[in-house]
Length: 122
Image (cartoon, rainbow, N blue to C red; front, side):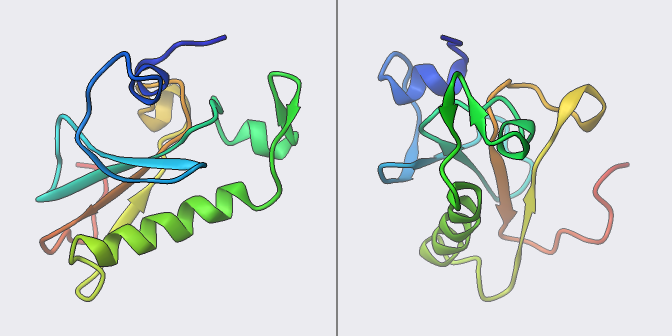
């Protein structure tokens, strides 16, 4: 099994500042925040990328129907919890080398706490 940094956090091998967790997702603070609030919505089960959901399975197990959608709902719930939902926030998924993905474990960036502006890249 792949042991990336998020798997190690979920398995208790590394520490993280956990904001929320349930059976399917953990939300942790990003160690290099790009906004006043920068959280990562991480599935407990290891999925390398969105491709795992397209094909419906990873590591021989089926990808649960609706799990990806639940991740978006968790992001929205946590945005309310941390006080950024009213003024707005941004969700980002980096996919692949050109998309800037650094950790091979699907995750959603939740950013907010200031006006982020229209540009995503410089």
